[in-house]
Image (tube, rainbow, N blue to C red):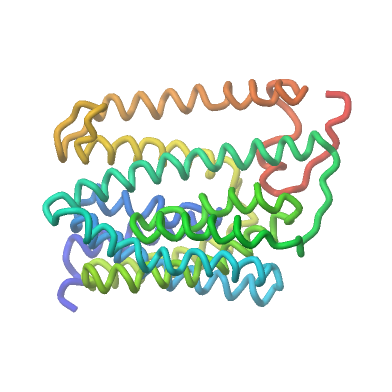
Length: 330
């Protein structure tokens, strides 16, 4: 218990609380925000942080899944097929790292893998919005929350997501959700989120168990993380309807991109030219500034490919919620 009152524990509780609030408000960002935050705080090595994050996520994601299950929003058949692919690969992922990577190289490899996973997670947000935009403009979208299951493709999506989560703790929400949207475009937004949350529970549990068996569990990281993240998630969920989610989510994309580049830099990824555990803060800051200015312009240009003006309806918030007003005359 003494570890709970150390400086690191206070930092972990604080980080867990704020990331939990973001997850509660937006439904995204769990491992993608928590893992790099703890790495940059320097509270432990990458493998210990991934294990602790997955263990905490298994707790707070279970609560979110129960809420959606009671509301009847998940498609349990679809979640089951995803889990059939993801759970075995989540169990295998940490062992693959141990089998093929020497112990002294594990930390830098995990940082690189997490860095690339963060960039992938950030890109899926934009892909998801563009898919929604195309569907709105096609005006042929039909909602069907019980679509015909595509077993092989769904198993493959689950397997790839399971491997990604098992190794990095990133992707149980963002990456799998966008592939669900591509495979099953008739799912309503509520069904999509509910199904994703339900499939994430066995996935994260399997990944946590496997990482614990390989790396052990550092309670000095895990317990403060749970203490901070669980109330943060509950509080965030209560205020979800009152917070401008689209603005926060766009901010998350910028943070994920900057964090991804920073982790690659910290891992000594050769193209960035930095040595291990070194970063280029000016470069990372410029990337964030460039995204802040450039992303709205790029999004506007993508809108023009669908015959829309660069700015206007349907807005990002409308596309995310699935409630889109008529775009006739634009």
